Image 1 (tube, rainbow, N blue to C red):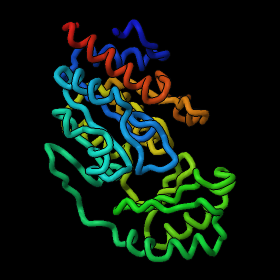
Image 2 (cartoon, rainbow, N blue to C red):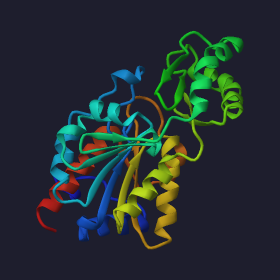
Image 3 (cartoon, rainbow, N blue to C red):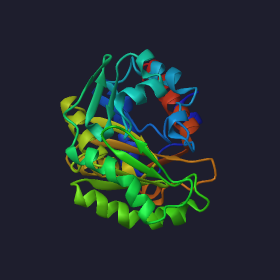
Length: 281
């Protein structure tokens, strides 16, 4: 497989970003979301696992690219476990939107925001008070809490019902709400994928970046790449469109230089990029 076998960017900026990665791969970063991008979306997040082709694609790409980083809302160690990244040399994982960092087998992180513990205690009562539908459940990520409605009878209606009270609770305890696909995540302010990605790119002195994501949590990363383009960084923005019946997040798809068919499409793109670079282009 080569890049000629996959879709190419539809925008001038995206084509320039891809060309910069190909021309000087050691100065480039490949940055990837996890859920919906490297792993299919599933009803139970604890059952999410990377697409079976991810490890091979990353191993083929890693020797040729400056850095590979996974930027996710999940705890870093959990993303490593579910993604199998420990078996791929050189991959860095920024978990909890950059609040945690896994590298070379070690996790580093600042103290947990006190608002998370406070919300953990009262969130069940808040959900009961607004009569959250059966199937609503809370995922405790340690540094954040996520309210999921995918398992309810009417997931989008449940999402809209819970959004205002969850946002009010978050604000009361100094947290913010990050909405996603049928999930409301309560987390500390000032932590997002845009800040995490920008910091990593500056740390690595990158000249080009490929960023792939699929959900609203990836919008700040898209915005960061768009901003950095204006400062001279070349960037390729990829939207992992779903293939399970859900429509891709419209804002992300509209801003992307390239839309691929879910995690399988991302694997195909990464595989093709690795093979192109291995030929010494």
